[in-house]
Image (cartoon, rainbow, N blue to C red; front, top):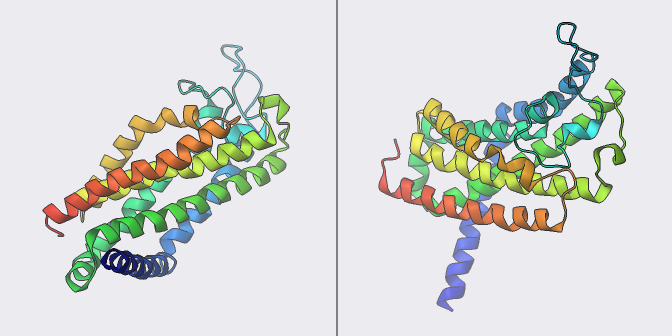
Amino acid sequence: MTANTKINDFGKRLKTMLKVDVRRMFTMPMVYIMLGVSFVLPILILVMTSFIGGANPETGEAVMTFTNVWQAIGSADGNAMSMDLTSMCNINLLYFLVVIFVCLFVGEDFRSGYVKNLFTVRAKKFDYVLSKTIALFAASAGMFLLYFVGAMIGGGIAGLSFSLAAVKASTGGVAACMISKVFFALVFVSIGLTLSTVGKQKLWLSILLSLAAGMLLFTMIPMMTPLNSGALNVCLCVFGGPLFALGLGAVGNIVLSKTSLV
């Protein structure tokens, strides 16, 4: 009976905290700006780069640009070391935008004094970390979905090919790719959240540390979420992302418990 009571109490606390976080998130202009950027970014990239083509007049070498709309989502080979335009300017850029968004949102809690007041009144630190992870993950999922829609629109405007065969992918592979990318975002959400508890009011420090940590993992993204992803990629991201988030969430909980909130 005691165990059930504790579970019920935790569920109620988390539900209440989530409601507060979601309400605060969607009353801040910042979330709409990030969602708007996620939607517009692929349109600008695909339309603008469609004017870049042909050969370099000095070297005669072909200029690498987008020829297929699915290149804005990823590549089938999962090559993490490719440095051409299509591999550098695709959906993977969103992971850094997610990190910045997390730092801005959590940093506002510390800047405004909301965190100190929250913990003084009722909230537990683990509830705070878990609620923030869930709410920010939902927002990051929206960013990825809007990027996908923007890429389809941008590809149509730029007149790019929509052929999946040309990029050695399938409809199922692309769906698995997007699911994998969305859940892999949990890794970057947890990085931003944990390091924001370190930087607290020093937003510049939180962003700098989070981007640096994200860079270390950036080369894993093409390998974990290739365009022709399968069940293994989905499982690794769907189960690995939450486990990674829980691990870093525990670290964030320790940081909040052992350090000053200002």
